[in-house]
Image (cartoon, rainbow, N blue to C red):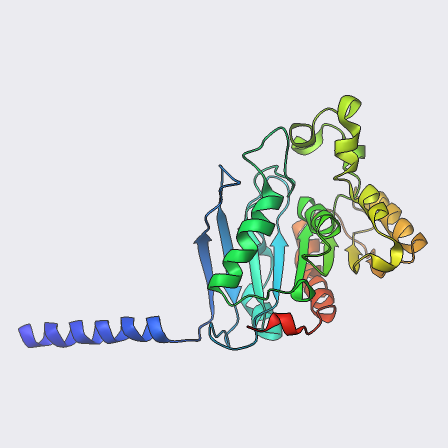
Length: 283
């Protein structure tokens, strides 16, 4: 009996050692990341491909997948085949928590909820250090639905030196039109006294910060029965007028999880097609 226990203990130790030194694995992991810019949540889900190797010379492309209003980091876990997509494109899929109504932005009214700073200054460096993630904007993309669609486009336009492309599903492209809805007032303040703050965070206004030829690629997909359809049309019209590189699709559909489940594959494909090899992506 004692000898059997010793053998079992040795086998367990060998297994643990193998897990520690093994350079490859595929997993969907739940992480907690140091986040001085946040008080409420530092949770993140990450999906790594089957071929994942922490020690390979070439770093992995990254796609951030942003959830919608009232949700958390688990929404895309439920709505997308994460492992399949990570394996197909050999990429890291990263699902941060943006708060119930954080709007993927820094807020002057709520300084302990700086989601943009968290992503750019805390999350991305963590991925570089711990998951062999790219250090190049040319292999970083953003996607999301609803509030997350807004976040993907807004973060791209505010940080064109950090990300190369965005794909929005049913994204809110005109936060000014929605006034006091969905916690926007608590994030950006009173429009009557602080309209410049809203404009500085509004996709329809953010595209004016860059000339058309310097606007990064943007993919908009919104159901033709979606309440956000008209503002996506307006965004597409402005991008077209500026001569930007963009794609706009409007199949039948509503502001719903089945629509996002059906179309997330096209969004991820768009981002991967816009990734570019870069020597800075290597160690």
